[in-house]
Every structure is written in C-alpha cells, then in structure tokens.
Image (cartoon, rainbow, N blue to C red; front, side, top):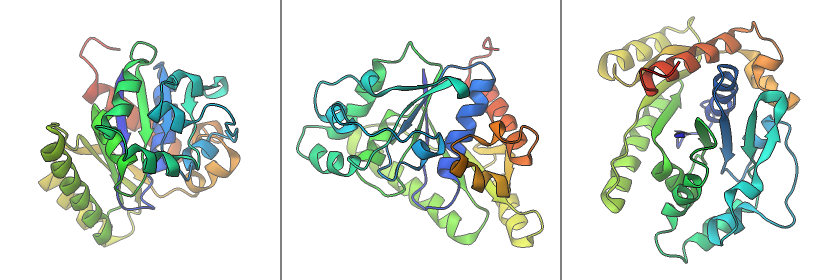
Length: 258
C-alpha cells in the first residue's frame, strides 16, 4: 500500500478536493483505495456524504489505545473505495497524543496493519502544524502539495518545506515533497501563468504536468456528497483529476504495474 499525503499549511488551495477526486480517479483506474480524514473539520468525510458519528470506537481510541484502525472503515461501494471518517474528536486526540511516547509514529504503525488490503491510502491532513499533521507526514510514502499559482501559496510551499526539514531533523525521517500540483488555475491571469512557469523551471522534477483548472463544479460537488466524476464525467475538473491519476500511476508505481 502506498500512502499519499495531501498537505499544505495554507487553507483554500484545493487540498481536500484533490484528496477526494484523486482517490476517486485512482479507484476508477482499478486501484483499491482507502481514504483517511484526520482533519477535525471532516470536510473530506462530508464530501463523500458520510455523516455517521461514532458513539463507541472513535479515531481517538485508535490513535491512543489498542482499537484497530479497521474498526472505523466505512465502505463506499458506489465510489469503489473505503473511508475512515474524520470527526471533531480529533481535537481531543491531538491533545491526548502529547502524553504518550513518540506520538507521531502511531498512525504509521496502525496503517501498516492494512498494508495488504489496499493499493493506496490517501490522507487528508489538517492545514495547521500539529500532532496529527506531523503524524500524517511521517506515515507518508509520497507527499503531494496542492497550491494555487499566486504569491501567498508559494509562501505556503516554502513553509511546508521548512516543516518537513524540521520533522526530518527531529525524527530521523527522510521526508521530501514528491509532487507539486497546481490547482484552481486560471489561464486568463498573467500572474498565475508567470508563477506556473517559474515553478516548472525551478522545481521541474516535482511539479506535475497535470494542472487542475478553476472549475465551479469542483467547488459545488462536496455539497452533493460525491466526487466530481459522479456528477459530470466530462467536466474539465473530472478530466483533470483523471489525468493526474494517470500521472501518479506512471510516476509512483513500479514499471510492471498496469
């Protein structure tokens, strides 16, 4: 199982949208997909129409006790993938994690129990730096940073780079940014095109060829509880995430994987 973490310390850059629609596109390509929402806002969860609240086992129990991660999995057969929902109790989980030894390694250990069940696990992490976001990054095989081609988003990329360096120093990890995805791209804006070109020149090995265009339907789809491909399979946002899934497969999978 390859663990992809979609992360950015700046909000509003298409992080959750990318996690959801990339997962759906990989599932459509025949991959077995697990989605993990560890953001207390649970936007990924509601974007899949999943609103169940847990009265017995919660993500807090999984991270802090012996409850198996598998106990939280919700099957989404209509979308050909599974999801571990986010919940407001993640706020308390983050506070409690500070009391245990090496707390940010727990998630990686829990996910290893599911390694043979899925091809990919995609994690939607919180936009802030904390126990949960660091846990997600430490669990990652690949880190994907979505960003808009604007000044403040570039600052967000630089902040992520600094965070990863600090995590590596503190934990002995070897994390790096594996993919940079340009989102909400408006080709009518000259400044956006300039920044896009600079990214290609300076970070050519990391920048995906696929660009996610600005698309109203991408913003509206979460209110319907569906990935965009299940609303309009021919929308430009749908086609862009299909292209991204193909690029992910080519870039991150072994040569002998179809």
